[in-house]
Length: 365
Image (cartoon, rainbow, N blue to C red):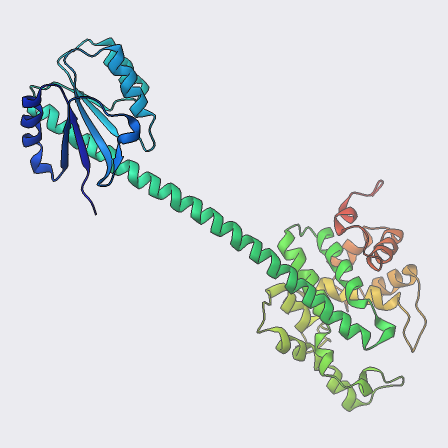
């Protein structure tokens, strides 16, 4: 690291030499000048002047203006004035404006030494502050770049999930759009149950979209079988939650999404699969999804039956409250009128307004 360049300014050459000799023990590059330099000359081949010590027996307004010009330089050098004038208005104004940093009596060696040491500290702190500022700017730029990358990756991730589930839905035209619809139902139900955190709601959406991903490993001969499944075929079908969880657990899989994929066939009374969990043992997001899935299944056409209306769906859900469905989730479902659920389905299939519209209070409810 190069040493600090110090400029001693004074018409009395003898005093300048004496002061230079006195300060020689501070490991400084000391230069002398009879007059204050122009601001443009403060930088040279040997570096920039970082501290100026000015002898001023009778400080004048002219000296003040020249010091103000130097003080406007970037970066500003530290400035010390050696003067015996104890009541100088010019020096007082320059101190108050921050143009000069210290005033010391030229005959007081301790005061001069202390002023120079303080000036050097100002230089060091100023350099450190500038380095910190540049580092902060660099960090902000890098953080902004990383945020943009994260957003881009999240968009790619979401698109991949949606494309994956669209591809799965396309295997069976009868259930096309099922994943999108139950994802919307699940988010709305979660909001009705007081879940407001956007990340949690989005994780529930992801889990609902991916809930049947394990069916990729199930043969079409079973998935599309028009008649009744055999016991062996049911064994294979019941593997799809665990298969799906195994397929996606190594990628960016959050807790809520994983719980829905693995446990979306659990029932509140413990008669579901794959683990036979009961009540609150089943994660809330999975309990939410079970009702959303049933709502869509009842109101959608299937090869083995015609779709039914939302009133019939409500009746069936109420009939299975406490057995298949969590009563809390059933109660939340009942807070919205049926026409609102129909509207959600209608808008979901046409990529219309977001779920926030469905959290608005209903008059009279």
